[in-house]
Length: 407
Image 1: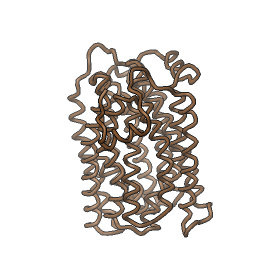
Image 2: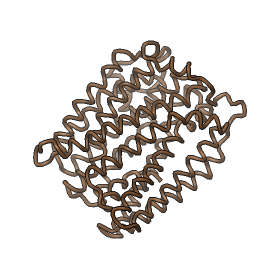
Image 3: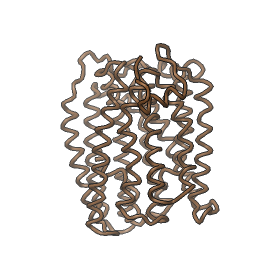
Image 4: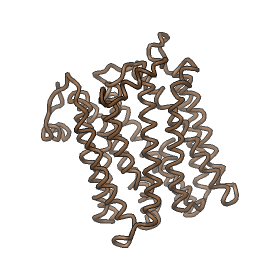
């Protein structure tokens, strides 16, 4: 589903006649609504009395939303675009709602010492199918011809079918009858654990908020830059927008193993230090091969961030708090996406051009702002006990395979 939908939300919107502000709205408001939903997500799961039932409800709605998105192509302008934004909002909302209960349920399956390795292996499988799906969707769009909406109808309809298949398999997940993992009335505990003066969780999430807000100054507009300014066809567009996620997924197993041994905070500090260099590298050259290599590098670094934050949440919270902590992180991420995307859309239209593009100064600004996200992380977040110490050189050697990753 994600391979057929995620890379093509903005191209579909552009085909429906979306302007730059509309694209900013599309990539920010659904994320904001998804984040606000996290306020009630824990209560929703508790009311249903089952993480699995909550996941199933969310997955079903997401499948229906993907299918409904295909209908946008048959509506007259501008109503097709308005309807598409509504369906993307519902798609994003249901996806955001499904994450925390799924994470809480998975926390009951996996031993703490194997979480990084398991999620790394899982991510490799996800990455392969995402990459294959994205290129299959690219082929369908190319066969249907540039400017044709029929290709988008096909790929969004197929995405709905794929999600319905996953609905069937999610229904087969085992949920312990002890309810040990279920969220309860733990608001005082949750507020305490999120107080950065007493706990490192809020400090970490503060860094994540700053990083994601700076990232989303540019993230929603890469598609516009690549398609409208660089004039890439769908094949090159798909390759350059999926090679990064593919590398993220394929190398998360190694990052996961390293997080298990060296600790999630050490992996996160590596990611927070290197991620700001990505948009700056984008400004040096617009060649297809060069930008593809930059995206390979980007995918590797973002893999460290994703596996690090995933492990960190499991380490920081006991089972009954995991739904709430995951919901809180989704809330923080959604606010960062909204603020960054809306600000980025405004700056894209107002910044003076550099090298013939107003996207270049936006990239430089994003890179500089990302560096500031390091401050709360370095000052307030300490590594948990029981992990192996390692310096930057040892981490690099372990990642490259020149040194074994053992306790």
